[in-house]
Length: 512
Image (cartoon, rainbow, N blue to C red; front, side):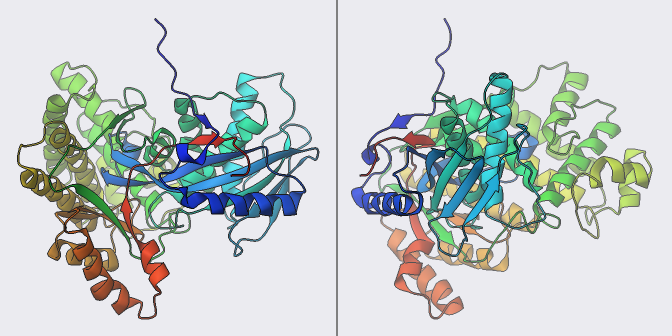
C-alpha cells in the first residue's frame, strides 16, 4: 500500500487557522490594502507560522532531533498573478519600503545579493527554491509568472521565533501556488525551504522550517532529520495544574544573518571541524553532508559505531540513542584536551593538514571571525543537548504519576539546556540570563533561551497557577527596569503564553 502523503492544506475559513475571531479585522485590512494598491483582491493567501523550540538548540544542523512547536504568530502573503515579468512587493509594516524585482526573461533563477540588507531577499529565497522545484518537476513549464504581493507578519523579527523561516516557507508556497502547483507535500515544502537561507549566507538546520510547515494545533513536534525527515506530533500529558509555556522576548535584537560571521555560522564551522577531527582521530570516513560541505557530529557517531561496534545507523530508538550519545560525550572529553580553544594552526595539526588546507575546507565557505575555535565546548554541547532531547521526550511519553515530579524533571532539563547554551555554546546574553533567573525565582520550573540566541526570546515551563506571578515578576524586575517607558501594548507583545498552532497552509476564503 502506498503511504499517504501529508499535503499542505487549503482552507476557506479563518476558524480553521486561528482559535479566535481576532484575526478577521487584520485580514479585512490587508485585503482592502491589497485592492487599493493593485486594483483587485488577492487570489489567495499563503501562510506559515513562527515556532518556539522547547529543547534541542543548535543541534539540527548536526542532524540530531529537536522538540519545537508552531505558534499562532505568522507570516501571511496575499498574492495575485500579473501579466508583467515582475514581482511587486508591499509590506503591511510601513517601516519596510515597497520593493519589486524583475524575473529574468531567459527563465534563469532570480539573483540574491546577501551583502545587501533588504526584506525582499527573503521573498527571493522562497521564489528561487520554488522555481528550482518547478524547473525539475516540470521541465517544459512556462516561465514563472509575475506576482503582486502583500506581506504581513505577527512573528517579531530577530526574536528567535523563526520569522525568516516562516517568511521563506510562505514565499515558496506562494510561488508554487501562483505557478499552478496546487498540491504540495509538507515534506517537499520543508525540504525546499531548509536550503533557502543559504542563499542569504546562513547555514541553518531544518528545525525552523519543519516546525513551520508541519505544525499541528495543540501538538508539539518530535522532528528527526535522519535516516529521513520525520515530524511526529504529540500532545502534552494531562496535568493538574495545567502545564503552560510562556515566551518572554528580551527585546534584544538577534539578527542571525547580520551577525553570522561571529555567531551562527561560526558555530556551524566549529561543530563541523570538530566532527572531522574526531573522524581523523578514530580513522573513520564520514559523509560530507553538512551545510558547508563537510562532515557532521551525527555522521561521526554513525561511522564510529559502524567501525567499532558493527552497528547499523541509529534509527531514533531512545535507549540506543542514549548509550551512543553518552559515549560521544566521553570521546569529546578525551580528544579535545584544549578546553579553552584551538588556533587555526593547532586545529590543522589535530586534523593532519596544513593551515591553508584547513582554510579552504572550513573557512572559505562563509566569512567567520574568531580568536580561537571552540571545538571542545561546541561538540560537547551538541551531544549532551541531543541526549536531553531524548530524556525530555521520554518524560512526555511516559510521565510520572505525580504532575509536580513531571514539571520538575522537564524543568531541570530546560535549565541544563540553558546553562549549556550559556557556558558551552555562548549563544545566550546577559539579558536572557537575567530573564531566566527572574522567572525561575518566581515560579518557573524551567527557563531557557530558545532559537538561535544571542538575544531574542526565552521559553519558560510554568503552571497555569503560577504563570501570572512569573509575568508580573518579569514586568517589574526586567522590562520596567531596562525599558522604563515601555507601554502596556509592548508588554503584551513581549510576554506570550504559547499555544501550539497549525502549520503552513493556503487560505482561499476571500475577504472575511
